[in-house]
Length: 253
Ligand code: PEP
Image (cartoon, rainbow, N blue to C red; front, side, top):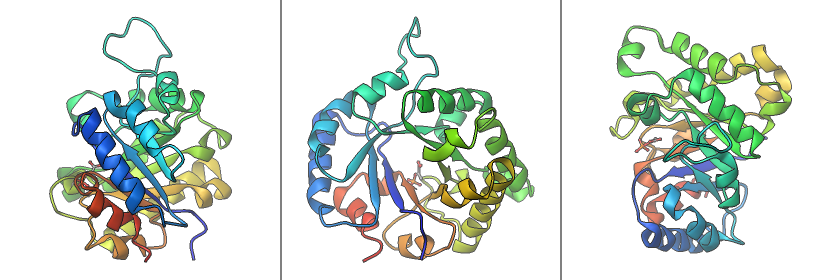
């Protein structure tokens, strides 16, 4: 029996207008009202955050954002700060998603600044890490993950990290229908936990939640979540339909 409460987090990416997001959120509130022993989070697009916060108010569903800027305010056209997300009702923020790294230039240094900013704003950061297919084939997986963890968490203390979540998302498994095998995922999660142990100590390594992301769906969620070091899932495609996402949230039943 794991002591860490699993987190099932849905990343809605650039899908759903405000009204569409509210419709999905309301449906999800109904479908997940009976859940216990699992935390649920949805991350709609920025423009839907406040409306969705109202729609899920009083339920067990938490609100997350998909990104933030590292500064608190200023001349940064188009950007959103941690305080703005907190004021909109967010408790979580996804940082360093592979799409941000690939298309928007989020380096490990930027990711580190964003993690620091999220913590200062009282948000729980979900730090995404993961190797590409080429890196896996070249046997570079552990080196890449080591670098992403070391740099992403640079200058942070054990105390800073109490609310941090790490999401291991092999880039080759995101939106491709290819899922890491349970053994591949467990091997990496254990490795990441050992990195945290070395850097921050055993207590944090044991309490830290490490999510798996990459084509998680109702047919594979139970098996993945059954692995000892997998503490939840970060879900893209299968989080968009409330019925399907609710099946993931109910993986324990
Ligand atoms: C993701 O984008 O974080 C993700 C895991 O996507 P999908 O579930 O669609 O593979």
